[in-house]
Length: 286
Image (cartoon, rainbow, N blue to C red; front, side, top):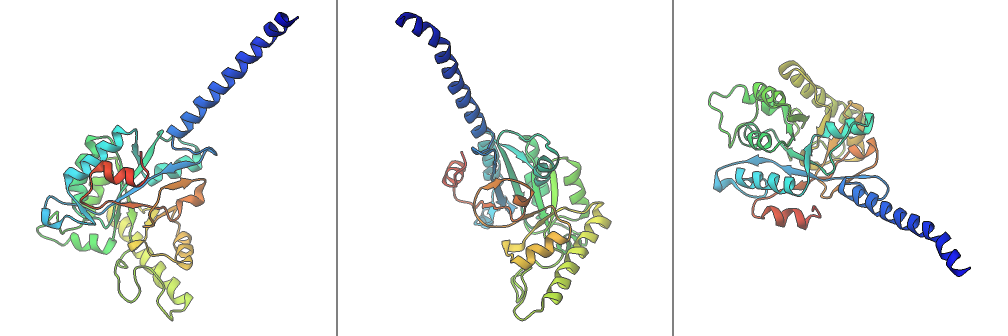
């Protein structure tokens, strides 16, 4: 009787063990794909500004091409694949496939070296990037006779070259509100009526979009807050202007649940002075 009992239970034991193994495999796969236990995506967004060979300029918002490339290599070696914000939008809306460990590389302000320094590195390693441009600076850059990659900004033809690479998306960084004056970026000024504020902000946004449309042949659907400054009123107005996602400056790694997660995406500012290993591991990227 005892022997018969053990033989009858053996298949159940094997099935239970197999179920546990399958469960562990699925959990590991979920972790590798950047998803948590509920299937949510973890997407780090790395924020750069200028990529310069001038050692005197290196600092909190300027890194060397060597550091930029070392970062891309480190991410690649640790299983990360560069995507754009629009890749994330397409995944959420239409179920398009994402790589197992997505990461978004962003360059703010539209410096010319996004084209001359960053793009060759991105192309070499098969990554993508998002470049946020201040339209009035791009317009002024078109008037420069001798652009300098350390100080100049992208003009319309430069933006077209970036987009033609198939590796770069352009985000709107306002037309002319990237300043820390009385308004502080796109924030509402003290004492300013809501109707006045909304009119001013939308006027700037529509002017920027008109520049991109008429000079570059497209309109960005991603908006980047200057200095990351945003209020509840600001977010609602920007969203009403038709943007599908917004980039902020709050530090952290994004947990993507649905399309609402695309507004106010957190980013990790990359300063000069840390190795890739130090920077990424200190911020929970592995």
